[in-house]
Image 1: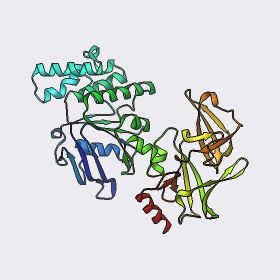
Image 2: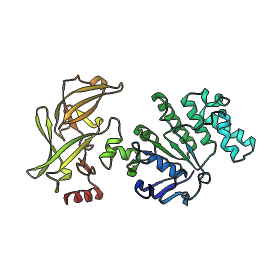
Image 3: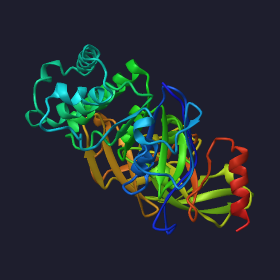
Image 4: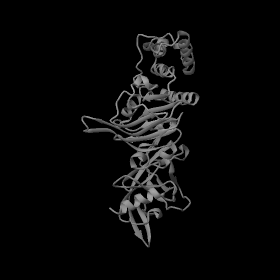
Length: 385
């Protein structure tokens, strides 16, 4: 096991004209599972290649157990990588594929045999040891690719979108196996994915990336419940967070956001942003499961909206309505689902609603929650525009 720290890591291509990675700062403890998640082209695979030594960094430092490995060749970093394409040797058996790296290191044959047996048992592929890659399914080949990495017993494992070539059912099964494997081995792991479900279910820590910049770094729960900006809020979560445009208005000393309802207008009290933001356009964010249906506690007024589309998913039903010309998703229990055309009275849980600046996308605050000094400083900055 090993700690991993990235200090102000930059990667530039084309004589400084294209910045792929910009001032990456990350640190994980020994044995932690780090997820790098983001859309295609955000730089997450490039960052993993830099950690592995397959790409040179343009600035900063990569430290393992406090030692700077930035200038080391890949073979000297004691890091094992599982590629998206499996990268198995087609002419070798499973046994030979797993043992290949150990033979390169010139370990005794008895030690190699014992390690292959250990890994095969761990991944439940003992019955596949004499097969060639072409004789196996995609899931079996992925297990072999993982086995080849596990056999090295490195300080750090790197997984580059290892499940993207599998079907949906097998992805779920392999996701569980990877998590169980990490719980048994407790080896520091970095895992790249564009799938936010994998990020939420696998990671101890998650780094959300966009355009070569880390937008937010924290636990899955922190990122889901307390997103730093509109991008993180919309990217993490399935279905994604609802975004409803609001204009802030002051009346009788209080600030309100105006919502269009099926039976007129509804004024949403916004006491957390009372100073200096009236007249601004903001975005109200609320997750589908946090939209309450029916008469609530009265802390916030009810909003009537007509159901436009229903999407049954089995364990729940997604109802789509329109508020302030924005499509809003509501997660409902299957036995409580209405029909298309029905009118629902909706209420937003006051401790779950988030507010974002419409121009910058930055978080402003949450109804019913005290704002941190950082949030207050951000509000002060926005007031000065």
